[in-house]
Amino acid sequence: MITKINALKEEINALRATTTEEVEQLRIKYLSKKGLVSSLFNDFRNVPVEQKREIGQLLNDLKNIATDKINSLKEGLAGQADAKAAEIDLTRTETPLPLGSRHPISLVKNEMIDIFSRMGFTIAEGPEIEDDWHVFSSLNFAADHPARDMQDTFFIMRNPADVLLRTHTSSVQTRVMEKTQPPIRIICPGRVYRNEAISARAHCFFHQVEGLYIDKNVSFADLKQALLYFARQMFGPETKIRLRPSYFPFTEPSAEMDISCNLCGGKGCSFCKNTGWVEILGCGMVDPNVLEACGIDSKEYTGYAFGMGIERITNLKYSVKDLRMFSENDVRFLHLFDAAH
Image (cartoon, one colour):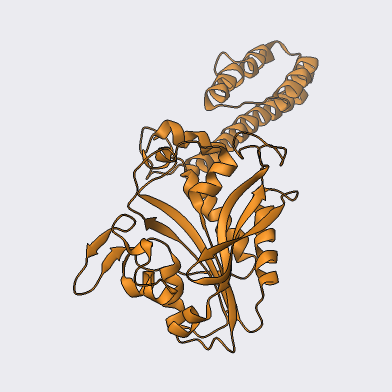
């Protein structure tokens, strides 16, 4: 009898349960009227008189151990259930909803902002509906410049004042220069509009990030170093750049910047037309006329500016061949960029 009691005690001490149903089954097995502990009490009547005191004490201890063990298992599971219940968000819908995906333009724009933020640039924003002064005149565009023609610009109102959809985010730069004295170090991300035929390579609206830095003794070497840092952060540490002379009304000297093709490593492929180089942006030193038009002394301050299309950078990173896909809202296309989050 003593051997049975000790064996059952070890068995009870080793009990484990992961659900309340398992705990109930253990209670029935050991503590119910037909359970293993109760059966030992039924056998107690056959114990010799001289052993009844000792064995009766052992049986009572066994019953207490079994009861405490079952209660302990029950309390442990109740605590887990409470913790799990606390994690339930009662505001969620009953049926899980599919999650959306960030647009590739947003992914690349945020990455560009992060890179320039590390160089000390802050974000500046302005209206998409602008006037002639901020889009053209303040930026040294001649009165007969082709960009003022209806073929390039969406005009909302012509006379007595020209109101239009901005063709570049440089208008934000002029608004900042009008209200702020140097030093100025800003980037201007935003959407712009041009009156162009929609195709795989062009659209009537797209996105730009333009930058402006004005301070004393700013040089072209500062511009080159900033753009080299950007290119290597965006496309990899082995990226090379080259600057080619160009013309923009608001910068002098002006340049266009190419990067070594990140698809072929500069060896030449169809994307870079076998040149090993891909053009990504325009840049230059801010023309003194622009500084003076915005109320900044061009004899004391110099600066550089640059601008690039976000779609262009996105194409280089993700090889999107058709610009129309960025604005068609095809979720199959958007889900291709889930892993880029």
